[in-house]
Image (cartoon, rainbow, N blue to C red; front, side, top):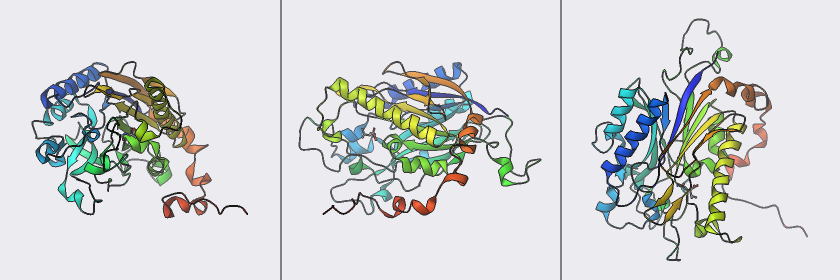
Length: 360
Ligand code: CDV
């Protein structure tokens, strides 16, 4: 049985320090309406979609910092965020969006020098339910607590403002997003094998840097994920962050950054037999910080089905059939038959690299 889904990434052009919340919200609403005209049932917005990517700045004023955060509990009611969820409900479109989540309890145990105010978070809103049905907090926070010593460096101070996500990689089902699916206790459901690939779509969220880490993808793969959603803000040129062993022009660096982005989305989609959708915040933010575009939708065979053509506000759209995940899940990547967990101990017992002894 086909389980088709009309899917969109809502790529955003830059949002500046000077952009007002109202201006940014208007752009989000326009993108959602555009996706609706294409028939989208699910729209993904970028990481920290409501503001500029503020972790590139050293912000010391508590008031200024609090302007970039929102509380998860008031997303559906706050004037800063409610219009988007209200429109999603009206248009009957599920949405997923990234934002900086204010949660002062996150600061407990944070490292010296940090000024942790919460988490780098994304939520999944089900239009049919009229509620947020899943929340994910970014696990792999890139960058540093303190700015680089180079005054011209592009900083990435996520470890300063956010605590690492503490919700794991929890897959979830999107209620009634796809028609004609099996429900619990449904007619003809006898064994667990009978329901595989037949229920409501299985989704997982990750945020930006997470896409570079196979561990998160595999955690989702082990829950039968069919679609991974990933919003991002990826610098096009950040030699202090990435290293300078092979000097590159900003143009070469950006080409490489887009290549690595797609490599992660395509390779990990293939190795976990799932679709993925990624949505960038792109272009020159705050006047001088270049972010890559490259928002795309990829298939379980690792192909790019649709991708952004600009670095501005743009809808990337594809109709997918979740049934296409079955081939990989049942053959090459049938985890139950082929994985050898007795050989993978290092993955969960060791964090950093330990090289074999030097030879004599
Ligand atoms: N927002 C991010 O997580 N950005 C990172 C850094 C390393 C540019 C990324 O992985 O794209």
